[in-house]
Length: 283
Image: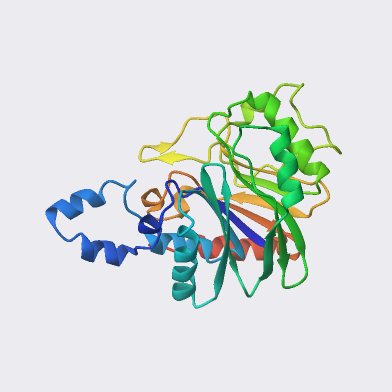
């Protein structure tokens, strides 16, 4: 399965569902063109589509309305000519959005028991829903898409081992998303997850030090905010896209998308074809 995790900041229908051409037509005035320069208020949906269309299942963060998911799924279906469905869950003060191709994924449902378990270990935090995803090839993955509080209400060095241990105990395969804290925040020996008892971090291929950008270039961090932890038994790899490969990405967000390849999709030629197709889009 090919998974895309992307924090589209302030994710909302008006930001996601307008194409570049629509924006040009709607804002073809001096005042409108000035507003277009305010990248936090307008999006380039063409760029969004050309990135996520190569995934089987997509996770988005920072939505506030449950109406966002169906609108995006409708637009993806229209523009890719492939049917997309959605599954959304309210996670404290946000809506966690899951979009998936019905040609690749047969069902997505909430693992209510596992989701309740992790709420106990880190009360007060915005915690991930645990989803059971079944592919049409019968591959079953237990996924935890997370947009953490920034900074965490509890000390990061204390909350991470609790969460990775609880998720490992519930049989979760992958924890991924925008963690809102850097790798250096969890580097003490007391907080390092122990093998066999915790999910382990998978370093993203591509070698980028940060997963966030500004109009002035990469942000200065000790490590990326967008990260992936996995069960050691899961065959997978993670690739973080370089924002330079995504035209106009700042119209959407300052975060780079993560692509996670699992099972039979985690093989060199498949990954190369997928990533090359994204990089081939010139906007």
